[in-house]
Length: 135
Image 1 (cartoon, one colour):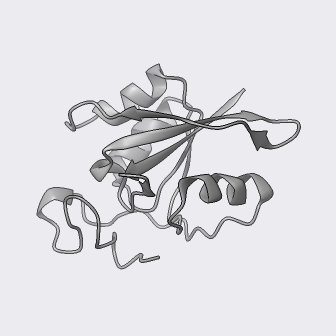
Image 2 (image 1 turned 120 degrees about the horizontal axis):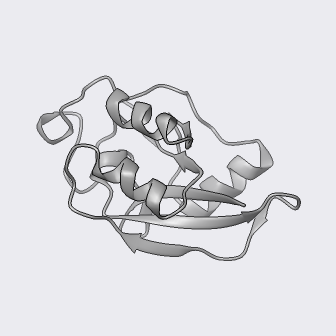
Image 3 (image 1 turned 135 degrees about the vertical axis):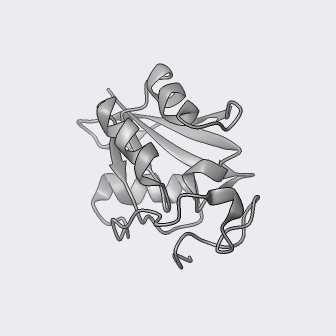
């Protein structure tokens, strides 16, 4: 079973993994490349390494994100979780549909600024993107 995790702020796709308020989780029928709904879980407190470990615990196998620092992407990879970076979109459901259809717009670029909370390219709860990645 494939479980795709998508970072969210409110009901929208979060441009930065570490700034997510919640994650939408999609259990995918791999043969049909479809999903039936999603579950949304609030994130634990954001501290170094917490999100990757938590995503492993809840069974995520793929993470679709726009911006993510190299430490987080490395931890996810160590846990066997596929990471797709540079994702652009607004609607989490559509981002997942596009991923499953092979039409997802993603640059593959990580976040080059590792200090999310002090980065002038980001706003704590939405708005700016990572390294200039905008929708």
